[in-house]
Image 1 (cartoon, rainbow, N blue to C red):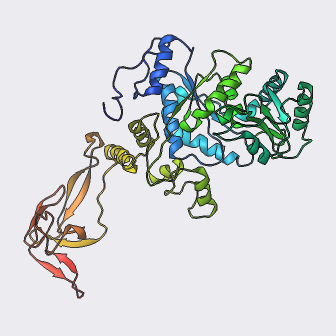
Image 2: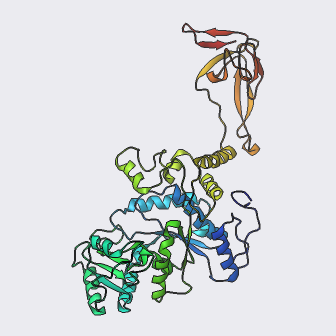
Image 3: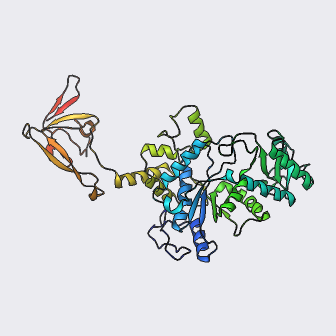
Length: 458
């Protein structure tokens, strides 16, 4: 089997018994197919949860094709959710650009797999706060006064266990009051955090009493100044998945070590069953391409590019402005496939996918950029005729167009050589070539200008 299994293979049966849309095969789709056969979920629901702190880049495009593709292939849906739990770098303009990019990439799919409303993690802040209060009451979370530097010191390292915070055994009532005061805005940024009480000796550092909430007095693009405490990603993400009824929470491989915390939070709280489960795959690494949002933002801020949609940028908006089609992007993502192993994809594969798509759909036009005049000496003066030129040789349905032919023509300078090497098949003195859609011509005479450059061929 090549890079992707043929899309025309037998489609997996959906939960309702109707065939799903054919698609490629990979280990995540195999997991989903097995869950559909077993009836584990009433409906397959995935999600694409970007943080609105910049424009989407090509790495996001592969995730979009996977998440929305699975929803499409298994008669499910995919939520577009803004992971907006960090107010400082986020902006409503990025929310709008994200929606535009997603709709463009899944052109033709949206009506089938995308709910009409955009989801926001910020809309769940009240429920997330209530869940945090429950964890405190259960003795599973506590308010910690350690500074950021002290937190790093107490956390330990992979080769040595961490140390318990001196505030770890605060009474439940004290934790509840402090957490309420944090919410009321009584403490400055960084003064306190709410931490989960798990295991400071865990070999997984992410399980060593991770922070669930931090204090940040900043205006949020959606909730304004209503909140001054904001949930951490690991806490907000799994609970947002649960609230939305996500069945398969798919993310890139760097989040694999976060999965135990994802599961731990959902196990502690009375969330609906069955709980969502996290699955990881290798992110896209494209040769000769920078796909770090932070570095791309630096290019924009330093005005080294004209903006996020500069055609040189590896953003979805940049690719769109460059003339790349959504079909080419989807085809490339299918060619790359989904694996568990980090690797480097050659940018030539992207260029191949773009060329394939353009070759199948682009209308052909003729142009001469560096012209040499050609005079057909045995063609009548004043006469012209039209020849039929195909609009697209790959698509006969695209029809033909009329191209004028007359005594005086122009060819590209690169298509003529006065002293050619062996096996040169373009025009040369005494040589013959066929003009596209027209006649065979022979070069009898070369006329040069005063500088010695070829000016006219006869």
